[in-house]
Amino acid sequence: MSNTAPIVKNTIYAGQKYVPITDGSKVHFHFQTWKLGKERVLVDDSKKIGKREPMVLVIGHKFKLEVWENIVKKMAVGEVASFQVKKELVYSYPFVSKTLRELGQEHHRKHTCTMTLHTEGIGYPDLDDLINNPCDLEFIIEMLKVETSNEYEKELWQLSSEERLKLVPELKEKGNKLYAQKLYDEAEDAYRQAIAICEQLMIRERKCDEEWIGLNKIKLPILLNFAQCKLIKGEYYDVIEHCNTVLEYDADNEKALYRRAKANVGAWNPDAAEKDFKRLKTLNPDLTPTIDKELENIKQLRKEKSEKDKDALKKLFVKDNETT
Image 1 (tube, rainbow, N blue to C red):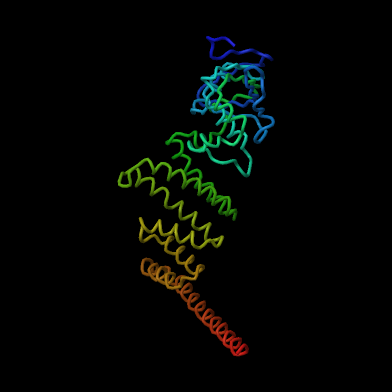
Image 2: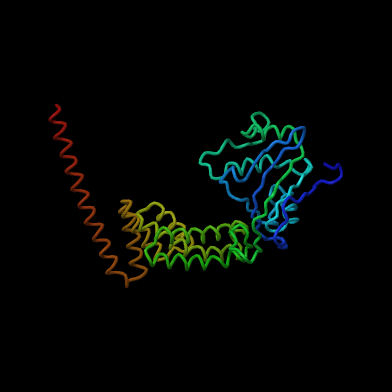
């Protein structure tokens, strides 16, 4: 390899067409990585490692192995080419390789902090050797497909703050439709995604700022919907936690009080449930018939539980008398 050129390309098969690759483009390709030196040694083959699927690279998002972005930009769709790359440009390759090898595996090898890196390596002898003895690498790239940024649905991490915020009401509406169809797990997932976006954006703001307050106002109704899904599934403690969050900022929120009360009944915290129901009755007298039914239900449940406890106690005494 030339001492002057950091990257040397050799076309193996000409491509079918050239598609301009710019920031945001998604590039699909298979690759082989060869270690160059006295012997040419195969390190990785994307058809045999990890998920055995093509590599997918989104251009312009600071991929750990920057040289890959540079070399795929030189290729046409359908082309197969070899790129010999100076070692100075591929120091990070062993860590990229470790990640790709472990994709789809249930049990990953140990994490590599600085201490374990120096003492134990990263869990693959060939990659440890590459770290300790860097050398030039050859990448054989088979370019499969190029999608421009407007030809595919972006993943969440690719979206700008404005794009993420626009997605929140769409996810909320999606969740509402799924809930109406009684697809509660799917609805819960849509609400969860919307809440996560709000929280990610809120992290960037101070709690007292208007932006944070505005995002929180968007988040809380979705959190209530999320809690409703949890309530239907009987996950009462999660419901209580989420309703507590809503009531922290909106103490008179009727939906939060009602759902927390129902969850407290399910978790058998009858005193807390009665307190919420009675407060709700005070806030909205129109709900009196509904609330009275709920309070009567708690009264009946208390009676049933008391009778069960008495029966259990009687059986315990009988058993003790028999043993003595």
